Image 1 (cartoon, rainbow, N blue to C red):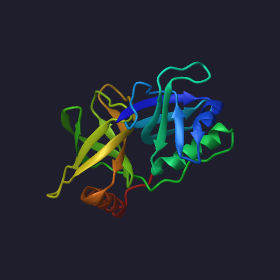
Image 2: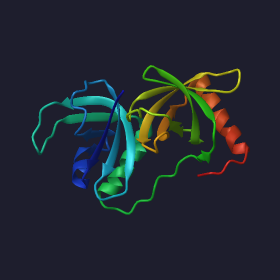
Image 3: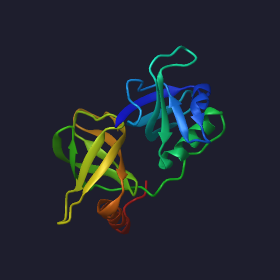
Length: 206
């Protein structure tokens, strides 16, 4: 999984967005290969809009010119298409409100984390059916990095897969990372059960 972040003006974004095929050209990751998976944090210049889109590299342009810069065309995952449409509205200068999302709850739950050969435990800042914000000790991961998780409590601890959507430096000892959970199979059901348990506990929605 490749990760990158890019800030585009509205014209650039709309020139690369093809809603009919759910594909998006972005001037990043030109060293990748067709078939690679990627996660890109996209911002629109002059707008307080950011979204992470996920997809598979369908085309690579390694050499370009100002009008046609190097980059990749992503075939977006279905879950990323609403975010891409949302970015297109912002790129056209339309008034937009943030997309509705699944309820997110402020909760401190310990997860066992594996990333880059390191293993440690970290607590959530908040969580939802789709992911969580996690306290991170040091060595922040990059958007698009893969992370393995296990719910630290209980006898049944299925492995969860997650993708880094964003990372934020904090103080000297604490940083935060946003993760998108791949909610599939037994692990997905275990994660949804954890979120339901937090919701029943009366945790504050954020």
